[in-house]
Length: 393
Ligand SMILES: [Zn+2]
Image 1 (cartoon, rainbow, N blue to C red):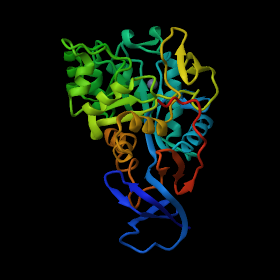
Image 2 (cartoon, helix red, strand yellow):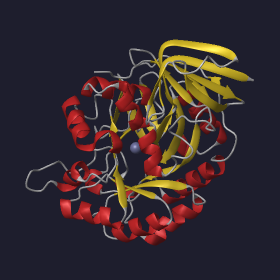
Image 3 (cartoon, protein in one colour):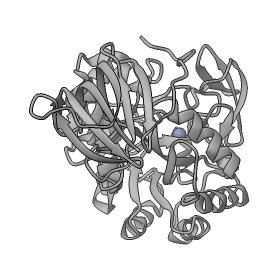
């Protein structure tokens, strides 16, 4: 089966192809040409006039969606979440765990590890992000205080073994005792380390970077506030040009003015968009669980019993659209934040986050108004369910 998609433009995303024609054979991209330079290739034509083709999105921080929490670690949940994400432009993600009792966490990790290479409907998990248990009690957000742990190589190794070496990202507060050793150890195993849920002063954050930290978890949220005499972790995250940094761009977690500051500081090679989405995403208001924590959702806002903002109901295509709206940046500059940049940060740029011959035909299609209109995964259209209840400022 040979299908040819035509559209108005395509972002690889390193370059823009105008009047693109993408030839797809057996779910794989065979060729990308511009109709300006070449005749229209033969095949079954799918016309997407006025549309932009981009790589399917890659979310490195997501806990669940569509009523399901990934910590359940079952094939059914991974399939449900994958199907949900596929209809919202996402082709790949890192299944993200919360802080939990050690036995619960180990069970989740071992369940998820076995599913990473299983055939899956929809978006594919490409590894695990452990958010906790090595977080600061002062900046724990929705993570249960009594389940936080002091970092140690031994504790990390228990998680690593349960996860069969499938942990690709770890959020950790670098100021905790034992954190620097644990960061260095995880880094030697190929895990990317994200500084976050942290009350670090600047020197502690810098030590975390020297030990191996390469990115930051939901910048501004669950971090020591910026002070001009003690800029803290935020000073390091915003000014170290080597560091990547995540943002939850739902208009609730970070004010649009702070989004613009983040954009000026991190720019198009280092900024990352994530959702931190929980099971309530795509569901009506009500009571849901984020790991073991009960969360009330009203108008898309997720609040724990302690009145803490917990996770989000954001979808990544909305994050892209919000970011473009808040910053005024063109879609061509924002798409890499949810495709190429997370892929490079994790070291998966050979597999996800860009469009090229030989790659799986995983393509997100945006309208001229930056609305997601279709997702193709492995060359098959997945349809789009209109995003609901997601705040858009
Ligand atoms: Zn999270």
